Image (cartoon, rainbow, N blue to C red):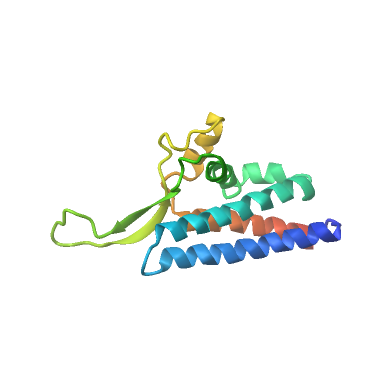
Length: 170
């Protein structure tokens, strides 16, 4: 177990509590009967904040081999795509949607009618996700584009929780 300063320990605990609360908010917004794009956008942005700041916490205060583990872990690597999404939310003022809804009723209808479950996926990068660093956009494309929002967050949260346990109980 790594010896942490009191404030470092409390901050990490608060970050993980915030991740949990934000994920629940996102999950609720996606699974509600009335899918509200603004509410989903807000919940995604909030959860991105906590994921990215927790990743930064581990880089600065965590175990020395954190980056190496993150970079070799398929769930940890997703953070690279999330970092670009978070940067776009902060810096790209033309950017106001990070997700798209797939499934549900589609028109024109064909018979027999099949109604696919509605999923919320990361939007295609297109031109709106261009930033200063093209490799960051590539990270978004490789790790997030078109994938289920809840599923990708769930994988990253599992990875960050494992890191939290490593610090708390190793």
